[in-house]
Image (cartoon, rainbow, N blue to C red; front, top):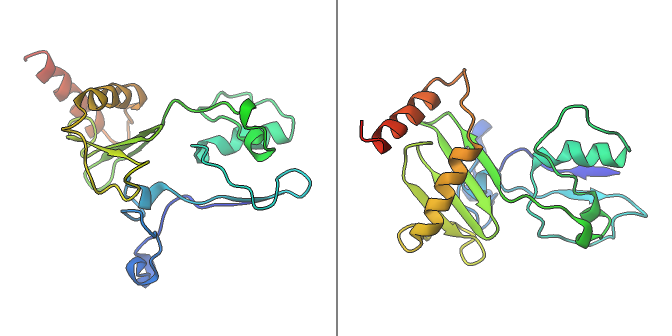
Length: 191
C-alpha cells in the first residue's frame, strides 16, 4: 500500500511562487492559512487488489484519521483514544459502512491566531480565535471561499460559535488563548 498526501497547501518559502504555478488552483490561501488553499490537500492511495483504480471520494477526512486507518489495516487496537476515524471502509469501496465526522476543526496560534471548522457543506473561519468575527462559506457553491454568508445565516454562525468553543482546548504554550476565552466570557456575562 502506498499513501501520498501533504500536511498543508502551497507555501511561499524558498522562493516558491504559488500564483505563478497556480499551486492551489481555485482555493484561497496558502500554508498557515485556514482557508482551503492552506489546509485542503489531495490524498492518493494505491493498494492493488483493495482500492479500485481511478476511484474518488468526497469523504470529509483529515490527517487525524490516518492513525485510526493504519491501525485498522494492521488489525491493531489503539491504546490511546484519538479523534481519528478509520477511512478503511471508503478505501475498500464500502461507503455504507463508513463512519463520518460531525465536523473537522483546525486552529493556528501564529499570525494573531485563527480557527476554522468544516461541517458538511459549511465552513467557518474566525480570526482571531475565540473573539473574532466568524466568516461563513458554503463550499458546495463557493469552493474559493469568496462569499462570506455570515450575515445571511446567523443561526448557522451561532451553531459554529458553539462548535468552536467545544473543539478548542487552551494550550499552555499559547497563554493568549485562555485570556481571550476569559475576556469573551466576561463580556457575555456583562462584567
